[in-house]
Image (cartoon, rainbow, N blue to C red; front, top):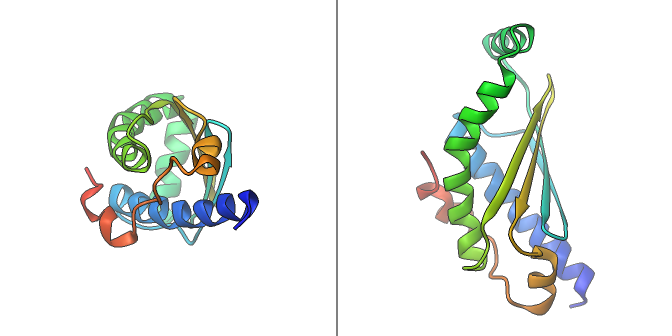
Length: 140
């Protein structure tokens, strides 16, 4: 298997694990998840469908400039959970940053890691992402 195929297969496995973990944290899973690995960055796009109360909450947070506080709260919950996942992939991986953007149909998440995940995958130093069944304990 060539390097690009290995990366794509890894991204696909990571999509499943991140979607399940998103469901564990938020209570509902995304409709679709896309992941791209670029060096030490993991870009994730969750396609979501916000229900009425979620749209109202997002509107309130935006209007009152509380989105930053909400994302800080979400980072505090999410980083330890996602870090356990990345540590399983390679014991040296740590999350050094996490950013979010939410709109009516998508949630974007950027995770910055302490090491180049792409190089770890290409060199064979990265374990496969956790199976969906293994993400059950990756929750708050």
